[in-house]
Amino acid sequence: MLRIYFTSADIARVRLAPTADPLWEMVLSIHMLRGQRGDLLFTDWRRTTAATLLAAGVGPAMNLLSSLTPTMGYFPDFLNPIVPGHQLDDGLERILATPIAVLRRDLHRMSVTEQAKPGVRRLADGSPAALRSLADTIRTYYRLAIEPHRRVVEAAVEHDRSVRIRTMADGGVAVMLDGLRPMIEYSDGELRVPSHPDQEIYLHGRGLLLIPAYFGVNHPMTMFEESAEPVLVYPVERRFDLLPDTASERRSGLVALIGQTRSALLAAAAGDGRSTTDLARRAGVSVASASEQSAVLREAGLVTSRRDGNRTVHRLTTLGQALLHGR
Image (cartoon, rainbow, N blue to C red; front, side, top):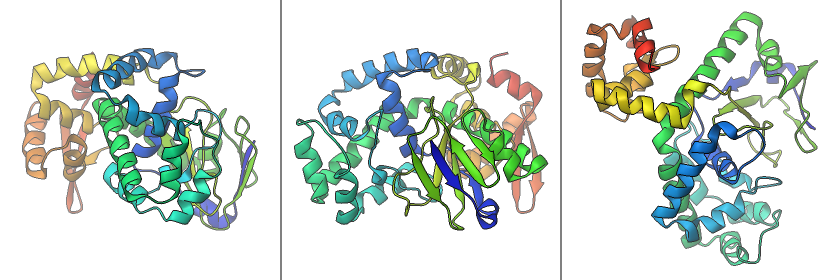
């Protein structure tokens, strides 16, 4: 069982990640590729992703990354640095800058196959070439396995965030934490994850960052090294309308109807409201384009927009939600 102990200062410092963390999604999706209990909803994703990786010829490069991310047991903490904004490029920069002492500490905790030992040894020695190769492999894997489903991932995480935020607003942090049952139990300043390997973490006023995970299906996870920033990565709710296969079919029809940019902005606006800058970042377009195309969506009755201080916040209308979800 994982036990995390809170002080009153820790309760005041509980945060919810603003979006999915790409490096945690990377690790958990590799677990998903192998198949595990409770993953039947991702059968189509696993089949198509395995075929995509095979066709791209990334097998040799994936061998080391796969060895570093076993489904059961320890995998290196340095693969999951927590960076502001949770952007993949920033996370990879942190991996490339990992001190040799940390590389050796993490890698010496692992048991790896004979085939993987030379690559692990180069990483433990701090070889810049080995680190760059690992970062390139992660980037390629993310582009092939996760990026095509990024908007679905973000929509599912945003839905979960909305639920947690409303619960916290209504009942406070303790009620929000207790609302994560049955995966998590919380009472009297102690959070427990019964299905987790034995581990104890004393927060000592550092607080806890909660990270919703799309590709997680089993128990919540955390870092092994207690000196690392305290995080708890937990699976989001499984929604039938936010699975990779059904969403990709629906999105292709939506793109044919209103165009790539507008469909991306419509998907990005799902949730509790997005600023124009947020829409642009999530849709991968310029702020000017997001502003222009949001006006078109607004005139069509698919989004509403209102001023909130010095920014404009956009939300889906009922019609916009129906169109996005294929109704």
